Length: 398
Image (tube, rainbow, N blue to C red; front, side):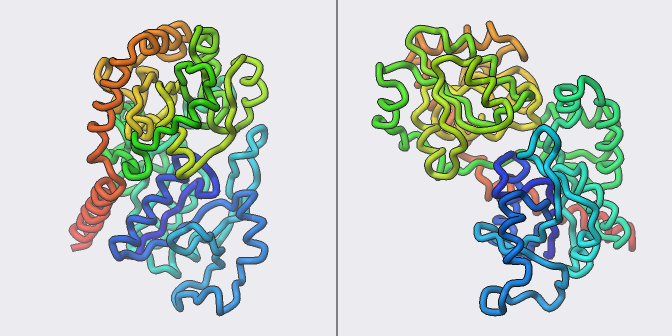
């Protein structure tokens, strides 16, 4: 099967859309399919692309059917077409693709059987339009609560965001939502043909055995309970809700990630340790070395970091909203608290700090809960969705 993944973000970007698109491409290759990715050029990728768009024959032999320029992403499992992009004003870590004829040309040249739209909003809209013109089935993956972001950054614009989302998802043959909360939101905004498709987790990389006593001594030299946050440092994540935890005796807050809110958070979270962006095996070691994982963002359609913490055997504190509602079993794998409630976050962390045996029990149950949620398992579910969409198109033509 030839699949073109049109994604709003792709590594080296670090976010849920980029990670899921990468895992999808890897699974397609592992199952013998032929994927190709179309993504905005990140600042790092744009620099690399300057010397990689026209590679020498020794470094790359293009498919005879593909004429659209490609870049060579060293960590990507398949070819990647990078579309020129600009940074989002006020949030340069997020880049927006510029209009380009490469999208339609790439779909045609790759002779795609299916177009996979990852978090479609800008580039994905063009991918959907191109797929419709070419008569190619499209599966749209809902991944980002853009209406919530509009509320956070502009104080308005929710209705406009939902109109755009509804337009592109309604044009798709199928929309895949990552959680029951996301499915409910889509249904309430009249998006048709929605099915559930959760996210996988790397249970080999993220595991309790990576707990590192030396790292824990460096982070909490007085034996404090380590409460960790991993994710973007941006207004919609509301990491400032951990300020009360910073004042708890015997608690050390550790923040992993970067973003525009970092300077203000350093002032808001006194005594917290900021580790910056960490990835891969190093991130897995950090996760396993936490005592509690705290997520504070109320706008998560899934929340991959919660699942990675659970795979690491760590109890979770998270808002009772969005994706965490499906992931955290309150009183068994962690504690759910009202969204935006700093006192509730602090109280949940205090309760877990005081109960090490309960933390251990939650952590063991959390690990057992996610052991079957591998990327291979959910990747095969995605292939089933593709097959059903192709079958429905064939039945209509017949």
